[in-house]
Figure 1 (cartoon, helix red, strand yellow):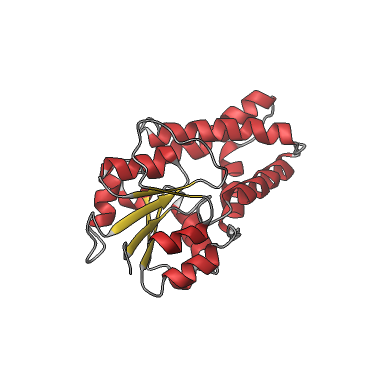
Figure 2 (cartoon, helix red, strand yellow):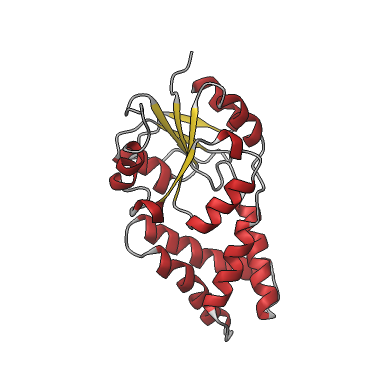
Length: 227
């Protein structure tokens, strides 16, 4: 029995291995700048980057600001004179070429697509996400992708999910399921839009208080049983 015929799937760290792609993109920036790529440097960059994405989720900054400002702050921290706009272009080019999927993502998408409609819901940069999705093994199984900068709103805002719901024929707030790894973006967004939510939690992190989580999975294959 199909419980949720419409699945709204986050992309990064839900289907795609974004961590691997992000490491490779950071390495490309380091090569361009002549900067030694060390775990400590990556952690410094990622702390800045993730903080800015959290600000984006709260509606405090724009994506155009974020993608440049992360490198501006990082270069200031490490005392490097470099062009943040050029480095961002290199970073996004590398991300767009990475189609590494998380374990079981291809199998799950292939099987679910037989009797479900699969949609990507993402805040990622549109040019990056469109390219990597088109070149990925899951492309034949995805009906459409809704990207925040094209929607004019970002997860977790209600406006973003209203945009998505308004463009999928037959979808209702009862027959769809939001699936994602991010509590602040995916699960909070589903809560804001009054949609059922499934938290992909492969690390087994503790459940937070104050969020409605209808389902929790640690392996993507569990999604085939509950959807």
